[in-house]
Amino acid sequence: MLKNMFPRNFAWGAATAAYQIEGGWEADGKGPSIWDTFCHEKGRVFGEQNGDVACNSYELWDKDLECIQQLGLTHYRLSLSWARLLPDGTTQHVNQKGVQYYNKVIDDLLACNVTPMVTLYHSDLPQALQDQGGWKSPSMASLFNSYAQFCFQTFGDRVKLWITINEPYVCAKFGHEDGIHAPGLKEPGIAAYLVGHNMLRAHAMAWHSYNTFYRPKQKGAVSLAINSDWVEPLHPGCTEDIAATERFLAFTLGWFTWPVFVTGDYPEMMRAAIDAQSEKLGYSGGSRLPSFSQDEPPILGTADFFALNYYTSRKVKPGGGCGQMLCMKSDRDAEEVLDPSWPICGISWLAVVPHGLRKLLKYIMDNFNNPEIYITENGFAQVGPLQMEDVQRCEFYKDTILEVAKAITDNGVNVRGYFAWSLLDNFEWADGFSVRFGLFHVDVSDTQRIQTIYRSGQEYAKMILKYKSDQSR
Image (cartoon, rainbow, N blue to C red):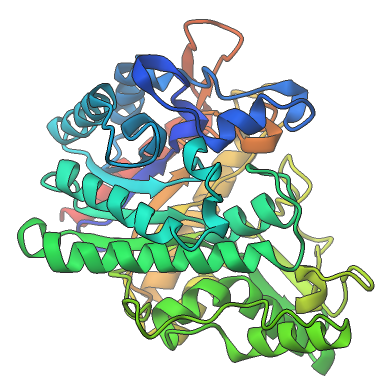
């Protein structure tokens, strides 16, 4: 292997999210979130499981910290529970126990020479704000901005890497189009575009607040975490498949990157496709894709780095619509196909394609003005019987990190860090605890939530040690 494949100060991390690990769902004055509500409804989650206790990180943080140290991480990505800090979602009522918890987490990390990367919103909206319309309501943007300013003010003296919103695409589509994530709404072809819009407005307001009021003193960096697969035409020479691939990219990666990194607005191809479909189906309620107001802070340029969550790749061909119904799938007219040569890990959607990450990194460099990139999530799932000797996942991490190294050394991509998803086996949303992504196994049947390192965790720790020692030469 080549020496010095990674730049000095490369971030070696692992990632988690509040609802997925913390538990303590009503402890010490925390308010309910939309995921508390969703999981307590019958039939929403695998095995009627929930995150009431999850990994119990709210009580067992010290154990999590031991895991972080055992891996030798330089960085740790966590999210704040909005409802733990502000139970009704507003700064009218601050829960000091929540503030104390996150202060301890941040201070402990720094004491161990681990840099925190903090996500403000990772899917768990306070239920009190959902009751007022949630992310469909335009007023959510300024409510989020107030919450963000509260966090910058409270923690920003120590936190220098911020993510405003994690995977707005997933929150919008899974939560408001498909109804498979909280808040469980199925309003196809309408709500997701509205939610994505308000999330972008919220992100931009928070970025501008940071830029104006906090950056001069705190000198941190702020972005949003965008999930994307790598996609290629099913038949490389087929013009229909090529066009479908471009549409697919416009409706996934482009939906959130164009406004922030390219033009300050949605991809023209996306708006044209949505409007054409509205006309075809006789929808007369105006454009279903909202427009950004000139009276609000501009969206363009509101990211100090590119935060990418990458899991898998797809081939694309036209199709996949829903007949005469309004829906996002019909709007984009692009169907995903799995290449049979790609191995599947655990869950049906997760084809293992490490080289897809390298291609996507190069695409981001070429199309979004060569930004600094942090890979903020990437991982390999295990289902079924527990395998502590997870040889396939070890191979996955080795192959993936090699592809990242090639993107840096061969393609010149400015990758600044890599965060494995996840530190711990945790509550994987609608899949509950049936899907395990952790570098540490967590026994959720045991009240002690005993944590045991997988072989992949040991191998990741070895890779970090090796590359860190290369970097220091």
